[in-house]
Each structure stands twice: as C-alpha cells, then as structure tokens.
Length: 225
Length: 78
Image 1 (cartoon, rainbow over the protein chains, first blue to last red):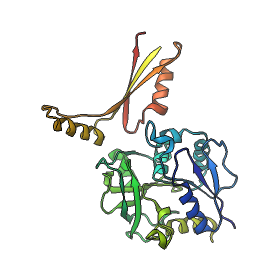
Image 2 (tube, rainbow over the protein chains, first blue to last red):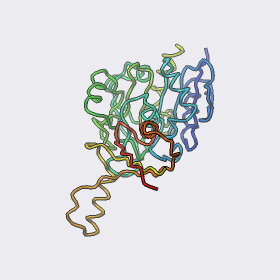
Image 3 (cartoon, rainbow over the protein chains, first blue to last red):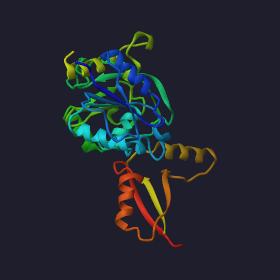
C-alpha cells in the first residue's frame, strides 16, 4: 500500500523540499505538495508534515499568520480525526499557534540564532513517531532556529511529563526551553511538534542518519510496510 | 474609530529581548533601570460600529497569544 503524505508549503517555508525528499526517500512515494491557500487536503492522507522556515516572514509571531491560513483549518480538522501531523521548527510554531499543541515557542534565551547539531534524549519511545528509538537513547539532530525556547506554565509542563508527552529533550539546553523540552506530543499522540530537524539527518551525506528512524517508525506504524 | 492594542508578555514569561535591551541601556551608561519588558503596539482604524466583543475577539484570535501574552485595548479620541 502506498504511503499517502502531504507537505504543506507556506509563503516563506524553506524546508518543505527537504521534508518532501525525506518522506519520499523513506517511504518510496512522493508526498503531495499542498499550498497554504488551498482549502482542502488530498483525500485519504496517512501523514501531514508542516515544514520549517519563516512562514509570512515571522510577522506578528513565528507561525501566527500561517496557523490562521485556509489550509490549516483543514489540517486541524484532519488532526482532530486522528491523521498524524509532524511539525518541525516553524511547523512546531504553527502547531502551538493553532492550538494543536500546548505552549509557545519564545525567542531563544541566548538571543542568537542557534544553528548546530543537538544531542536529544528520546523520552517517549512508544509513540507513532518515536517507536523506532529506544527510551533514553541519545540521537544527534540538527537545530536551526531563533525562536525555539519552549514555554508552558508549570501545570501544563507537569501534565505533559506525567502523560509521557515529552517526546524529546535536549541533552544540552541550546535555547532555554522549559525543562529542556525539544519535542511534544498531543494528548492523542498523533501530533508531534519538534524544533530539531529530523529531515536533515536521514542519509550519510547529511552527516548523520539519526532522524531516519522517526520517518521509518511513522511509516511502518501507518502502513505496516 | 482609532484603537490602540497594547500586547505585553505575561509576568513570569522570560523576555530575552527585554533583557538584551536592558543590557544595552546599561551599556550606554543609564543607571537605575531595574527591568525592561518588550511588547507590541497595534494601531487599528476600525468602523465606529465595531463592538467591544469584536475587538476582544481580534486580540484573542490573532493579535495576542493568550498562552504567553496579555493585551489592553485603548480607544483613542479622534
């Protein structure tokens, strides 16, 4: 069975091609490319990816305008029906701004754009996106962002931790994130937002392949390939 | 009708920009600055018939992120 995925492109997205390439290389099927102004998604999607970049020039707040675009209404409806959604970097910001994930991404505490490899600890290895890893495993995934400082109130953070919804944590906190959180899941487990870029670590030419298992586990979990 | 919407970070939310501005003020030799918090000001020109509820809605749905920010609406005399 072919894997039906879609990559959403907003004006200012710049990792959409990398995301599409990763999904195609790992699944063997090229994803649909969907433009932000589209009101409908292709039918029968197995997976939706919101890529990194600087949608709408980061105007207002990172991800704020994108999260109110026509296609996001369709993405929110699909996510609520259980379609898996992965948001990376700006995609994570869009997910928090749209309310699909709790919290917000603030300016990095170091005030600089942080572009480097980051070591992450896999906190939850049982989700759709992370079952290809071992709990506690350390993986190296690149980060590149200015606003990746995860914030939520203590009550929300306690709930996220208590429910196993922290997917990844930074081993060295690169941006000041609350409790070193690098990626979070929604309550149903079908939406993952993360600042690090797994699509930039899927083949040896990238300098590392630790991101590949994320796509492999999602695809395997969805179509049993 | 002219309306100003002031958006500021909630107390307790870290403000790295405000901190950098604070350091810069100190670098310029200004003393006695205890803290700086950066916010945003929106100036809206809306129909006179715009209700307070609609203005609130605009703030909650777009102008402010209620997870991290508060807003204050100020109607400006023409």
